[in-house]
Structures are given as structure tokens and as C-alpha cells.
Image (cartoon, rainbow, N blue to C red):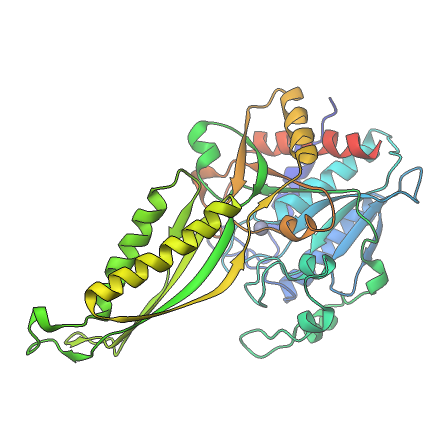
Length: 407
Ligand SMILES: [Zn+2]
């Protein structure tokens, strides 16, 4: 088995973490910001130093190509994203880009020229923290969004995506998008506690949870808190409370990793001595199978309807986003699993609870993901951290698996 240089990978991650560094040890490197530009400049410099041919496309996705002996063959693509959420961590996204870079450097060091070309990629605006939607530019490459749609996105200050892309100097040519992709690998931190709890460094990702997002508007009767007897009320807030607990209990009827979360609630008028007339709450539900994903949605609607009726409250439910679960192909899951076993690294299969660029690229190419254990399961925060031995395992795994397909 071949090995990557983890000291060099570590040094690159440490250097990248200085770009947009926050006082608490994290990074703020939102898409198309000055910090993103600085990060991109650094990535481009490193790709060039590794003797890769660098280009970027009309969406600012950056590619570094290690040319194979038969350049006519579709390349093996590997990477992730360099943008972060505000006050994010040093590993989410950038870990995948730096690991891919390290693998390319290691292939150079080993003096190997694979038959297929191998390309490192940094996808623009994965987080969606500045410009919605998330995974915008891998989605565009997969044909989900037109460039016009992406270009017209606005941030909170009214700045336009395309103007910011031009401003930082990374609006390239559409012809620079990958024409065909033999396979795509994305290494990423797990962002959850499962691997750590089991003492396992590497997760072989089998797919991504399907997701439903809904808004529930509860119309009760707004009344004064004092003179309204308890038995006469149509209380939207009490209904909301029962729904929140009910959705939690419903999700608990399924094994892991099914989840349901209410993260947002707004009561009107929202004052201490008034029974609110209206409460709006969000619900986020996720399941790993198509059937379970649909069933959770149906059960949630029935639950909301029943509880609202019991409270004499009217409920309007708006399911405004549905994303079916994804299963990565057995060929990619099997290759990653075999390779990590051959390396002698403890591993387990795992389903990703969060979305990644891999979910769109999966639509146009065989795709696989590699998770590394995340300390304390913490992510999207300044204390996000990993063990360097795990980074070694992930880089070795990517090096051997990517070469297997490219040789
Ligand atoms: Zn990410």
C-alpha cells in the first residue's frame, strides 16, 4: 500500500487555517469573500507547485489536473470545498481539498504517471452561508442549476454572486468544467459523534440521508392570559409544544440515523400575558431509505393534524423542500471499504446526515465519500478538530483508491 505525507498535509491545513482565522481558533472564509480569494490564491499556488495544470470554470470551481498517460480518458476527480460558514472550523470542506492536494503531491513524489488523469477540485459556495442555495456550483456542474440562476443570487447585503465572483478574479470559462468524470471521491469530516463513540477513525459513507423541510403555521385564538379559563382556549403555543415533542418521539421510533428537529419557532404577538394567536415552527426530518423518508413525512402530517384538532387549532403545513436519500454505488463503497481494510485501519459503514457536493456529483458520476472522525462530533464551530493519525488514514485511503481507478 502507498502512503501519503501527513506532515505536509498537516502543514497545508495549518496554513489554510490562517486565512480568515478567527480569535477562537476557527475560520470565517465565506464564499467569494476576500478571505475566499486569498484561500483560492493559496490553493492555486500549491496546485501549480505540485506541477498540476490549473483552471477554473464559469462558476469559479477550481481544478488542478495531473495529466495521465492517456489524456483522452475521463479523469478521476477528488476534493471538496474551501468556503466555510461564519465562525466555522478549520476542517469542514478544506480537509477534502487539502487531502486531495496531498494525494496529488504524493503521486508526483512516487513518480507515478497513472493512465487516467487525476484532478483535484475545490467547489465554489458549498455552504450556502452567504449565497443560497448550498452546494450551488457542484449542483450547477451536475445540471441542477443554470449559471444564470447562480449568478443572480444575492447575499444579505444585496451583493450579486456574479459580481463578487468577477471581483475576486475567479470567473472562468464554462469549457473548463469537467466534460466527463470517471469517478468522484470526497473526503470530509464526519461532523457527528458516531465514529468517535465507537473509536473508529474512518467512515465508509454509503449514502446521504433524504430530507424534508416544512413550515407549520398554527392558527389559534389570541386571548388575554388572565381572564381566559384554561378549558376554553385554542392555544397555538401549547399545540406547537406538543408537535415538537411528538416529532421527536416519532423519530425515536426509528433506529439511527433517522432524525427530526424543530429548530425555529415564532409566536405572534409573542408577549408574556397573551395566548399567541399564531405560531410558526419549522421541521427538518431525515431518513436513509426512500420508503422511510416518505413514511416520516406522512406520519408527521398525521401527527400535526391530530394534535391541532385536539387543541382546536387550525394547522397549515407547507413542505417546501424534499430531497430523496442517496445511495452511493456499490462499486465505490466497495472500493473504499476494501482499500481501508487493506490499510489495516478500523472502519465502519455510515450514512451522512448532512448534504455534501458529493450528492450532486453522484448524479453525473460514480461517487464515494470518506469520513474522518471528528473530535467531540463538533462542526461548524471554532473548536472543530480531528486527530492527525486519522488524516493519515484518509489520505492513504484516497491515494490508493484513486490510483486503483486511474492506473
Ligand atoms: Zn462541508
